[in-house]
Amino acid sequence: MILKANLHNKIYAFNSVKDVLAKASEEKSGDALVGVAANTASERVAAKLVLASLTLEDIYNNPTIPYESDEVTRVIYDDLNMTVYNRIKGWTVGQLREYLMEHETSNDDILNISRGLTSEMIAGCAKLMSNLDLAYASKKMRVQVHCNTTLGVPGTLAFRNQPNHPTDNIEGIMSSIKEGLTYGSGDAVIGINPVNDDADQVTRMLDTVKAFIHKWEIPTQACVLCHVTTTMKAIELGAQVDVVFQSIAGTQKANEAFGIDAALLSQAYDLVTRKGTAAGPNLMYFETGQGSEVSLDADLGVDMQTLEARTYGFGRRFRPFMLNNVSGFIGPETIYSGREVIRADLEDLFMGKLHGIPMGIAPCYTNHMKSDQNDQELGTLVCAAAGANYFMGVPGGDDIMLSYQDTSFHDDATVREMLGLRPLPEFERWLEKIGVWKDGQLTKRAGDPSIFEK
Image (tube, rainbow, N blue to C red; front, top):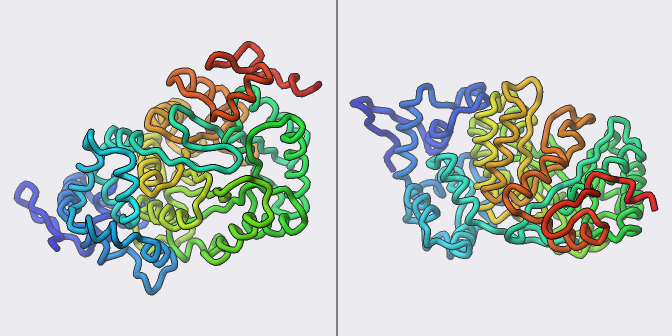
């Protein structure tokens, strides 16, 4: 295993596979903050040259965090398909990239080899790819899952209807839900971030939303994005839970800060399987984001992109219905600029799909980053073209509870129209039934919540 490269008559030497992965990453403020980033563009190129020549076996034998000390590493390695791994372990990371980019390589081919790839292998491959490479490879991959609707159907783009309210006012929440639905947003999930993480409050929210869903026969699923233990308490109280939400991360230390481990998530999955209200079998919803480990002082010297890949390796054990990043939500100490967040979104989409996850993207930003609406809209369009399974739908594009900017109901409708994409099939038929969708596009009644005042 060679960990050095000669570039323009200068030798660049790296300490470990972890160091190579970090130095090969595209520029991110969080990697610079913790001192793992390349110091110069030349050093970054040298690291990419070294990485391209490493074999998958080299990376397998050198996880960024040891198996013995980290549960995330253990989950990734214990769940690996060793038959597939042994077939491809002699490939270099460069050869893996070339295989994914070949025109003849199909979706089935890719998803088959993905079962033999560790998260570090997937992260390493992404580091050798341009933005267009990432978009092209992501578009080739299709992952379908089912809760009450089927996510990942070719030719579709789904949305989470996100009706957050700064005081958990149920009337305000319901008003946002109704508006979003009339723009075609909500086929992925109606997902509420609560202010009050309390099982009784969560139960009341879910009962209200589910009663509305049943009354109007809406083919979707509802979720309150509280801590997994709160959802479990709500289930025991009789709450109508379709999917269980939890934020997850790429190190055991970060997950401990979130108050979770693999055993707890397994218990939650078992509970919602037995007592949940959705058809399934995919019943978990995870949110992630490059930089979460840095913000928790739990990165352990691993670069943010590799940690994000490890998060997907941890999450895929639980066969999630939904997983989306919020990489632009944490900055600027982790993701500083619009350029960095667009790159992170494309990396996350590629890495999530290559893990076999139905990846959604939240191309979001906060007002204290060097990013603006134009960056956000560009990221949305590129990720939609690259095959993102879903985006958020936020009233006005400005979440008044979480204080960040994301895709609006209008953005959702615009992207679908521009790219010729449709809602999920069950949901499209319902939109036609209530009169806001016809012949593949919204009607003049779109945006009129008075439809629900009958």
